[in-house]
Image (tube, rainbow, N blue to C red; front, side, top):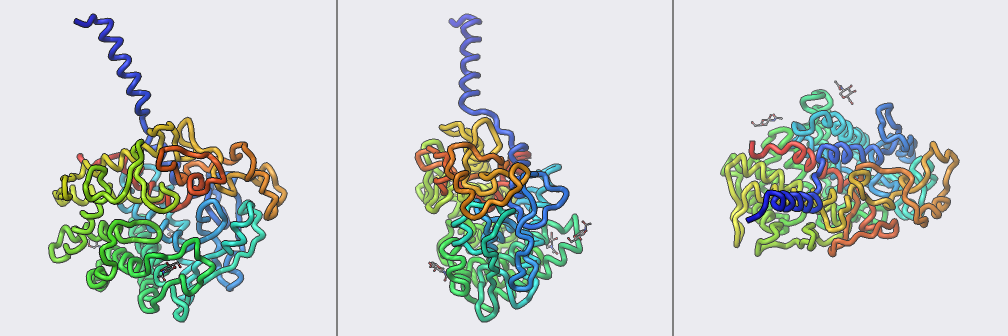
Length: 487
Ligand SMILES: *[C@@H]1O[C@H](CO)[C@@H](O)[C@H](O)[C@H]1NC(C)=O
Ligand SMILES: *[C@@H]1O[C@H](CO)[C@@H](O)[C@H](O)[C@H]1NC(C)=O
Ligand SMILES: *[C@@H]1O[C@H](CO)[C@@H](O)[C@H](O)[C@H]1NC(C)=O
């Protein structure tokens, strides 16, 4: 028999092991930081409320080359480009985060809405001219060749746009989705703004649908190879219509979704800035569950998508590292992990509300299965991984110090008011020193499939943050800050 003392020692050892095994995650802190990150990516004239103080006004003449006001919006990632296609997806996902999880955000809701408005205000500008939708500001090749602060930019700020003759259906339909999602998110706090967004979303959707074509072909080299639309534009048209239906209940949009869904085929496993398929099925399944006549193929496709993610399912199409992180083909892996985790939680809530479970080939998944899988991903990202490394900058004891991000790498305007020209920043890129400015909340591309991580500016897929990695993560963190599925 164990003495009381040895029992106590055993318990203490177990407690210590557990502490070492899984340090508690502070979802509330991570949520605040995930939203703060967007202030670091702001382009344009910064408001008094700006909290990330090392950033200053930048790109105040954007759009002047085409006599438009394109000031504002977000820099895409570690560069100083405004790529409106992925930026619109980021805005849609910030909107969806607020719509689905705003009630769980507490005092962070105000900040989340401000981050969303920074995007939606910009898209009102980008779609201001009904016959000219702005696709991008900045010259990708020249921008990427320089290592300079946004505040100093001396590279061409060329504006690229699509028109009825040179269309861009994926670009404009994603903007329609962003505007529609924003209109729902602002409905209670600012009704007139919400109406304005809705009205614009209608117009932009018509533009996308009436003038069909890919912006690949219309603006070509400006956006390819960076944000070429590989999956075609039908998914964005259906996604845009789904968001417009959610925002308006206008049956014309539901009819569009139902009659066009067949055109995106069986590719139901993808979700990101390029491909919206899994997102469409999850989003539409919410009302499809309530109305049997709308059920097919949305629910079976969403179920199939979930079965493709479960680690022990025979139908799995993703992979997991030894440490448990979800991997999918395509660079900047954490973009997949955060957006797929978002869909896991949203779908868990929808099937919970409809009292459903998911039957995969060799196993059954209930809402808790989905939530636990998403929680493992979030916890991994925030430090419960073999390296004990947080992949969110400024969160936890150990996080990436040398992220691939121009503004973060170079001394701030306060420290170094003189301009850095195109290559003046190169020495800061090459140095082994940590970045001087902490881009708090930025989630980087993340570790390799063997759970290793190279904290190096040269390793772009691992060390670069991107707005579309963070946007779905905002909703995911809000959920885990106040999980209420089983209440
Ligand atoms: C609603 O949004 C508009 C447009 O941004 C703004 O001018 C107005 O002050 C907002 N109203 C409220 C009540 O926040
Ligand atoms: C866009 O360009 C990529 C790369 O050239 C190509 O694979 C894809 O099919 C194009 N998409 C459309 C819709 O034209
Ligand atoms: C659409 O219908 C739903 C369900 O009846 C309702 O909750 C929502 O407020 C409606 N939206 C609009 C914009 O009318």
